[in-house]
Image 1 (cartoon, rainbow, N blue to C red):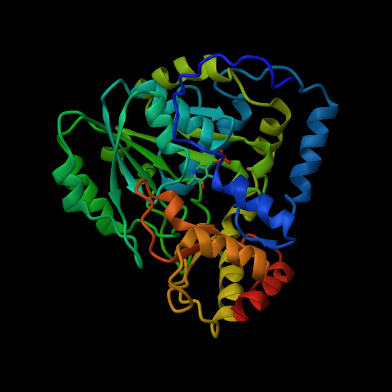
Image 2 (cartoon, rainbow, N blue to C red):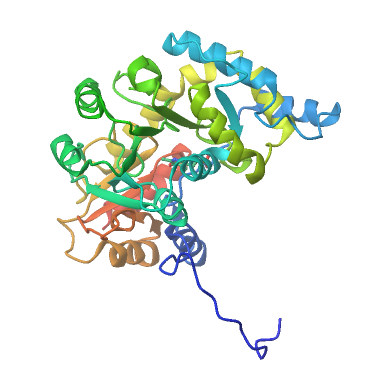
Length: 387
Ligand SMILES: Cc1ncc(COP(=O)(O)O)c(C=O)c1O
């Protein structure tokens, strides 16, 4: 379009938001032929049987709108999975909604419940879609910093910041970008401070099946007292190596789901049909997701064994497919500058952690995605050992 046209004034609702770091680093990786461990996606394909199921449904007429809440066979499969996994009964008709990835679920939930000036407790570093969703709805994020190396939630600070305007707390375990996970003590603390309030919990559990060293995933589904105030988000992209399909779901008690669906029906109405039916069938077999933690733990251990003698320091990731590396023994440069240098000079792309902090706190940490083939991890490790 001609640039000589006069522009109209723009009153941006997100004046400080720029292109996400994931796009920036992936482009930089491409431009400099670097190994891309920045954006969180596998460089291997989805299970073949799942792809065949999608092809089957595409070829047999499953190509029109799905029901607003999601294809019923998928919601029923999920209710069965949840019952056997967490011993809780979830109503597939009224307590599960299939969404266009967890990102749409998060935006929909925040839009359904947050009004002007409501406060939301967010833990920094935070997955990058939370803050814009809060801000676009006129609500106010109250950011609490988690610090390296363990990124534990300082529950006493949370309690001090809670007040009558606090409407929601956002949890994410296993955590992106740090790989930290909630433990039983965190659940005790959460119960202690949230009991007797009207605060909702938005629990982002997209990495529920990627948790290491025998730890138990602390889902809100395990705790009836927390579940009655929780909305939980999941992503098939993470579980089935299908990030490009953008299919996920959320779970909430029916009185909350009623409000979520009021927004969902005008945001997307429903999500692509053949994928939903294919996933419904594929979920009947537990093998894939029950083996996912050990599949990714092997990748984590392989990557870490290769870089153990490098100048990077690390605490092994407890969950998710991300590993943080501390480069403070190498340089004092800002993490954003060092991530660019690492991509251009050493040909490995990562994500600087300061971008996940509202105040850009720089703790000399970079995030590396190990959802990659062994040969990709080996090439990256070889480069990292030379730094
Ligand atoms: C913590 C977290 N939540 C939500 C999402 C979004 O998931 P989806 O791709 O299903 O929208 C991601 C994806 O990276 C994530 O890491």
